[in-house]
Length: 73
Image 1 (cartoon, one colour):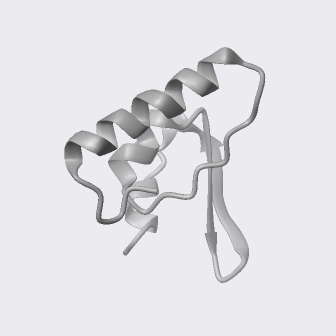
Image 2 (cartoon, rainbow, N blue to C red):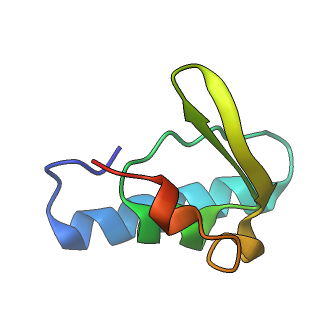
Image 3 (cartoon, helix red, strand yellow):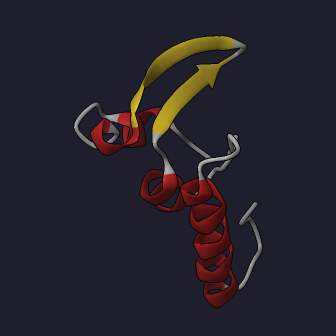
């Protein structure tokens, strides 16, 4: 949801998403092209390429699992 959004607003969006997730009464599916934003918020991740899942795991493991190299804009 952050393409073309002012950086200060991106931080506000992140805070709201985290607040909603922390309530624990809903699941949030975040489709995001900005890696750092997604990594900061992800409890779990899934990367798809041409409709196929090519990587999945815990958000805290994204960097160690090389997810940054799998995503491109």
